[in-house]
Length: 263
Ligand code: PEP
Ligand code: MN
Image 1 (cartoon, rainbow, N blue to C red):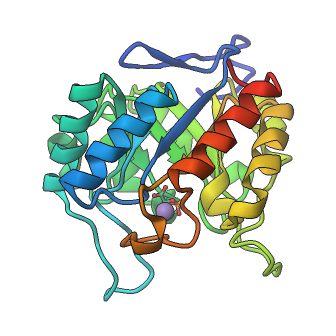
Image 2 (image 1 turned 60 degrees about the vertical axis):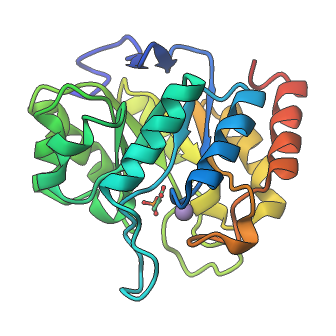
């Protein structure tokens, strides 16, 4: 169903009127985790300044350690929604439990299936049973073929509003958090008709190379970029090292705009 052979036209996924795919790249920004009302208010203002239409924020965090901040759950989804309604954004947030999908779609406009859950087949079926757009991230060590089959699980349930996301894979290289597989972008665009985003935060894990990596992703045909932004990254409850502060995000956006890569 997701194969290019079946559909030669690019699928455009529409999230609350925002188009992903079809030629105009978008930037999805927002914090790793929803933390406080104050944080989300600042995020709302900054995203509005930068014209970000689709805002991310994690409420169910799949953390490596069980002792790390696990997210605010439904309360976090509510805070994300309230900020989004105030500022007119659409939202995307990760869900990890199939049983939470029905609850989550009361709050979010797009459901994210994270890297650790790319082959959680019950979750794929649960989001496939909805008609809510899905952002499907590539697994930590998943092949491109496995990512495409994961998308197929969702489409097989009747939901073809799927955006794929390359977010780096695990390799021997330690200079970056994960190795961004840049060639996955044109391959996914060739093999499927789905839009493809590149997550420059979880792939690189390094603020100093996020901008050139984002440019590279757009140059090879990505339909957009995901980047984490936090008002005070140093005190963030997750991914403190790699979230951009507002000045860094302003610079990131200005550079992409002035290079003509995003409108
Ligand atoms: C995220 O986007 O919040 C996240 C946890 O990313 P990934 O699933 O790609 O690690
Ligand atoms: Mn993160």
